[in-house]
Length: 271
DNA sequence: CACGGATCCTGATGGC
DNA sequence: TGCCATCAGGATCCGT
Image (cartoon, rainbow, N blue to C red; front, side, top):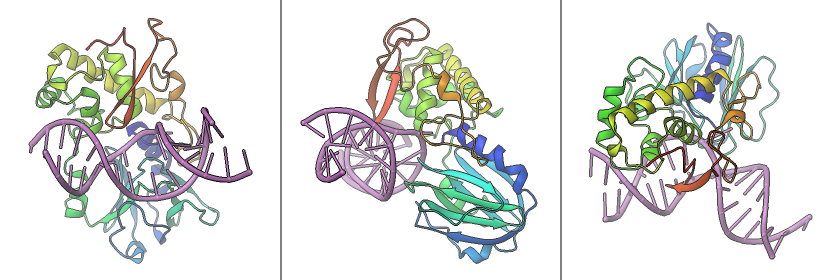
């Protein structure tokens, strides 16, 4: 479910509400991708200082450490006072003085991990190899060009890998490549400088637009207030195989790259 | 070091 | 209705 826009929309939807709260209790459901790393009691009494995002991770800053939260493929978060009893797929509850933060994740590819600080090896193992933030000032075309120049894999797979630039998942990789006019199968190191600059700009535009629209709700994504996103309605290629390109009318194609679906317009996007 | 494939898990969907 | 295969917004691990 969650790429950068969905994670950011989630963050925005509960960060103001939880800031300043004190943890009353924490409880776990079924095992997630990684263990919490400490006894849930360790969190009790800590104050929530704020919520940040790094790539697709939510970083919940506490007075004596931080929680790294990842939504995997099917995770979503709710924040409310008076939550019902945990359901079948609710695997983490953080009860605070200002409401309960709850992670629901049917497939359990997500995780909640406690680290004493961002420098903690536990945190570094998850964050250490992440690429640049696409919506930040550090994402400049020159560095992006140099990063791509060292990769000979298909550009779409390089984007998904997240070690050059973070946050671009399966939907937005296809969308950004469409906007940049680049065929997803093109080798990253064979893209000219101008095309890389176009791609850099397209990534920023697509992700920022998706955040504005509340993310994409394909099946069940919703923010911490239970609201759906709407970006999927304006997708140019994602999940539109067989339909006419909104730009040129050619038939949108679907292919597989590394077990993942890729969508593109064979006419608008050049190798 | 970088690449491609297998893998974790559950649920929805479509064909027969 | 049941059964089976396939697919799904992610990212790590492993062999090459």
